Amino acid sequence: MDLILTGGRVIDPSQNLDAITEVGFANGKVAKIGKALPRAPHTDVRNVAGHIVTPGLIDMHTHVYWGSTSLSIDAEDFARSSGVTTAIDTGSAGPGNFAGFRKHVIERSQTRILAYLHISHAGIYAFGHGIEVGESENMRLMNPAAAIEVVEANRDVIVGMKVRVGRYSSGDQGAAPLDIALQVADQTGAPLMAHIDEPPPSYDDVVNRLRPGDVLTHCFRPFPNVPYSGQGKVKACVEAARKRGVFFDVGHGGGSFAFKTARTMLANGFLPDTISSDVHVLCINGPAFDQVTTLSKFLCLGMNLNEVIAASTCNAAYALKRPELGSLKPGSVGDATILSLDEGRFDYVDVVGEHLIGDRKLNSRGVVVAGKWWHGG
Image (cartoon, rainbow, N blue to C red; front, side, top):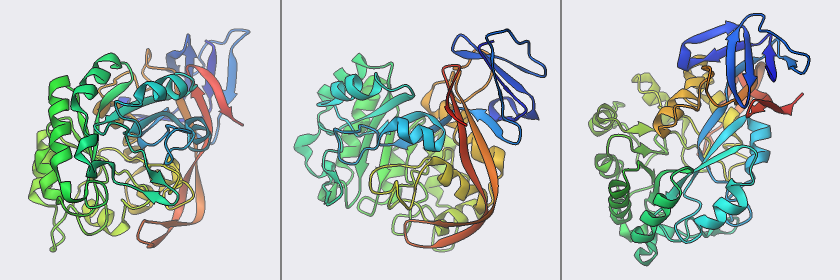
């Protein structure tokens, strides 16, 4: 064994595992789980008693094309603070600049970065402090032919297509960019992640277009464009989309998560498939902050710990079609996150300014990447 984590509470929803045991890593992968694993003289043994050990956290919605798009943050800094070993960049780059994203950010990162490719030629190119341009407003920027070429050339790191629609992102073009992105997704056999903000188009218009395996992000956004009726019931189109295999992702961000919406949906038994931060420069200092804060909000809203961890591990891996991620099964990638579940009085805020006082908070205390202790105390 190269590394053994000992004394921790291991929670791995992919195996229905919740027990105090050891996790061993060798040759960059998970080697074995069990008590009293064999040590060698070179084995790095880390005592994580009092902490939780999970598969490496996956954040399904981030923006990490740092230094080249104005909304992006540094993936490795984020990993250290939030325990995220796999960041999914959602459309920061398009077919016109993906090569730079791959060469200068993805390939240089010690933590894993996968990407949804934007249908817009330059991705989300003008969104940051002092500027917010909806890249989907200009149909001349839609570049489906080049997008197909880029997907085919980068299938090892591209997990699907991304499009942003709504009043702020597609303006008077409505759902037209979504239809173009769906054509590329169909031609490449790739899933699509669709962003939704204020209407037009409506929540119904967007979700009705999505196919099995596609992802609706910002699924618990505030009014207008909420997923429930005025009577507080989940919309029929939302229930139908889940039944046909559409995934619902939180994508908190700076304007896309409301406690009221989450409470309503959870009261109906409609849990998000994946919980993600949508971290970018406009929300990293609040209201989203990071992935562990986003996860903590759902703990305080009533989801149990195993459900919350599943939504950032095995559920995300399933949506991404990357079964080697999000698990501590032997042979899985050698990533793990060490968390503390701290008790106290914590002030959480959503994007409309509602505050929730919670009694628990998850914090990142250590990160294992490729079978090696990468960061932490």
